Image 1 (cartoon, rainbow, N blue to C red):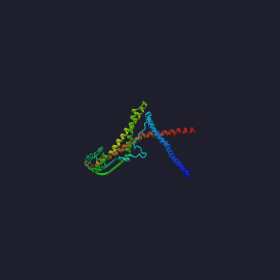
Image 2 (image 1 turned 60 degrees about the vertical axis):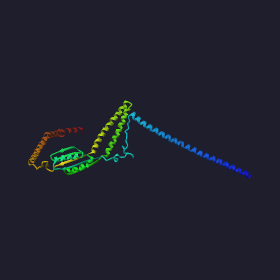
Image 3 (image 1 turned 90 degrees about the horizontal axis):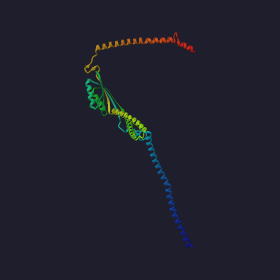
Image 4 (image 1 turned 180 degrees about the vertical axis):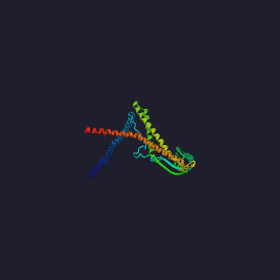
Length: 320
C-alpha cells in the first residue's frame, strides 16, 4: 500500500507540473496577444491621424492657390522679422546699426567776408562735402553744406577755426525704426510684385488678367514711391547738413568801419515823414469814398424799416 500510495503521489505531482507549465505558456501568449491587440489600434490611429493631417495641409495649400488663381485673391506675403508680434517679431532696428540724421549750425564773426567765404568752400571740399545753398550780403553771408555723416564731428570742430564762434548747435534724429520699417515693407512689396508677375503669366481668362494687372500696377506704384522715400532718407543719413553763418562786426564791411552818415539819416527821416502823410491822406480818401455811402445806406434802411416809415413795425402789428 505504501508503494502504491507513493506512485499515486508522484503521478499527481507530475500532472500538476505539466498543468503549471502549460498554464505559464498560455498566460505569456495571452499577455503577448493582448499587447498586440491593444497596440495595433493605437499605431493604426496614429497613422490615420498623420495621413489625415497631410491630406488636410495639401487641400489647404491647393485651395489657397486655386483661390489666388481663380478669384484673384492674392494674399500679401510676409518676411521674417516683419511682424512685431510673437517671439520672432523682434525690432530690426535693435539688431542693426542705428540710423541717425545729424544736423549742425554754427555762427561766426569774421573780419573779412570775401576771404572767409573762400575758406568755407575749401573747408567743405576738404571733408568731401558740397554746398547746397548760399546767401551773400554786404555785411553777412550764409552757407548750407552737406558733409558725409562719418566726418560730421570733425567738420563741426574744424568750422570753429574759420572765425570767432558766436553760437554752435548740433542735433541728432534717430530714424532707425522708420528706415528699417520702410525697407521691410519695400522688400515685401517686391516679393508681392514677383508673385503677381508669375500669376500674370498663368492667367486663365481676360477677367483674371485684368484683375492681376491692376494689382500689379498698384504694387509697382507703391514700390516706386517707397524707393524714392528710401533714397531721400538714405541721403539724409549718409550726408549731414551744416549751416554756417558769417557776420562782420557792427558797422563794418570788407572796406572797414563805416561811420554814421548824417545825410543818410536826414534823408531817411524826411522819407518817413512823407510816407506818414501819404498814408494818412490815403486813409481819409478811403473813408470819404467808401465810408460815407455805406453810412448813408445804413441810415436809409433804418428809416424804411424802423424809422418814420416803419415797414417792419407795420408787419409785426399786422401779424398780431
